[in-house]
Image 1 (tube, rainbow, N blue to C red):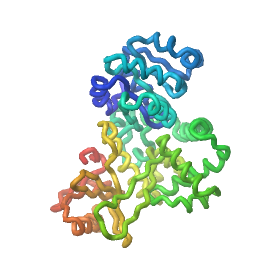
Image 2 (image 1 turned 60 degrees about the vertical axis):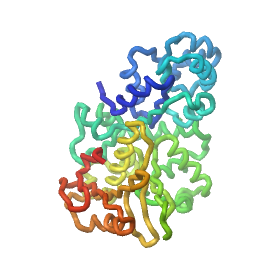
Image 3 (image 1 turned 45 degrees about the vertical axis):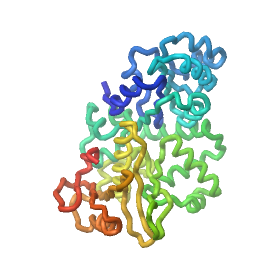
Image 4 (image 1 turned 135 degrees about the horizontal axis):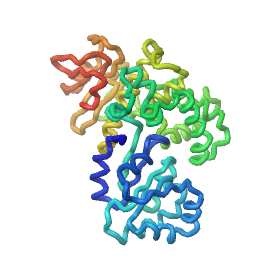
Length: 382
């Protein structure tokens, strides 16, 4: 059995909500998780033409076959069901009755928002976290292996051939999902845009620059970036600019939800290349930030992560916003602790008077008089 961190969250939600929607990137393990967690529920995939045709042509008969509820996979393929589901849920007090999943999150969420808003709890299932990877038959060991493999179950758990799997993943995503989300005719330019995004990991998003390099206009890039976000391919880390009088950066930073996919797009062929690769620092930063996201999503919490930068170049890699206080986190890929690592934290302390702070790096944990210094394996402690 593959243990997933959101199991505890699911146990809470099924006792409180009548329906649950599982969202996340394609191939993140949504179907496997619901089959394991809800073994007593009928499982229906609307990828199946017979089931899909019945759901579209006679939704009442389709749903009447599951009086105690069911797992409806690829639910977005039959949007007509959602208005009928609304009536069933409103006329019943049964909790955890229907579980909805789908590989096209944009269309699934659009259907839910139109008919089931306020009736459904959401679980964002991202690829494996560090703790989940440990339960696999051949768990990744080194930092470079973690970054290179990423977290998709087919890669980490099943050890499917890395380059062939990601090649198929990118092709399927572009040729299938992108067409469904938005009818993009110029798929070649969209693919170029995807590869260009990988080369900008950890950088502030410059739409004009991306438009020039891709060969399309500014508005198209904005739309395409939204598609990558909606389908859990890229994550944009927003800037923090509250309660400051000086000029601050207000452009988001670009990261990928999976570093394995990012490595594939960057042309990295083996995890040993990451030891001295030019993108090592950016990929390590990406890896840590997404791991922090997974820790929150798996507990049903929204992201409270930001970055901070002023016009003079002073910067904090991640700010954990806790309302009245913000915890600054600096992310360094080196294994040797350097006093320069503390420069941003010291500046933040002087600016705000807040004394907490953390360094996450590739070396051993050490005691510091002012800040926490932790190894990347213990990122969940944050």
